[in-house]
Length: 81
Image: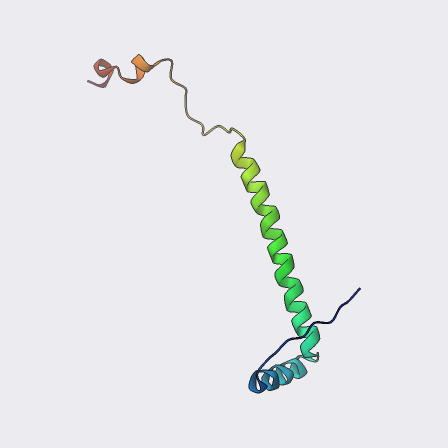
């Protein structure tokens, strides 16, 4: 169900918007409705992607490194010389 809204614009902006919409073969109302629809969809997709990314961060994943046997092996200076 569609519902109307009221939008207040200065005369110059409204005149330019009407001319722009006419060149596009549409109305100011349809042009604004399409733009708002795209913005809302873009925000929905962003939130969905954000949730996926956050859920992936919560999962453990391998970085390809090798595990250490113990703390002493890590700090064994004799092996470094």
